[in-house]
Image (cartoon, rainbow, N blue to C red):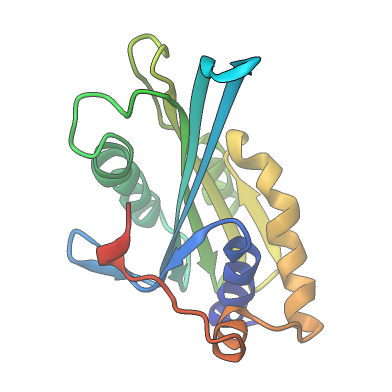
Length: 200
């Protein structure tokens, strides 16, 4: 299975709830896609003017295609989370995230042609980044890592991203069944793919 075919179907799954941007450039390097999700929840007492609380949740996901998953690639993923996704996408260059920020998941989705060695499986599982704001009073940011391998059709994640396995595993069968991908649906429905200049 080709990484491009897998990514195309995966993007369609995410496009139901995420804004998809293609391509996406970080620190001068181009990546195939980025997805953005936002949810706002409010709690009222009788009328909207009596707002008890509001909370905002976010997920930023960067999609990466590669021939193999190496330690250097995981170091690159960590640097993207720490030096770009957290300060730029979460805090937008400010000291703290927006007022009602509850959490931001910073997801790196790596799609690899080759299988992953046992050593790299351990590295993926132990991948960790988390940052709280004002003792979590302003929420937190947390890195999620998901790796799908085309050679053996496996999915590996770090601990906090384990719930994503089901979605990523399902894509293998979808591609085999010839289900449409993101590009086909975009063309058929004349959907305009977002560009980085429009991103949050």
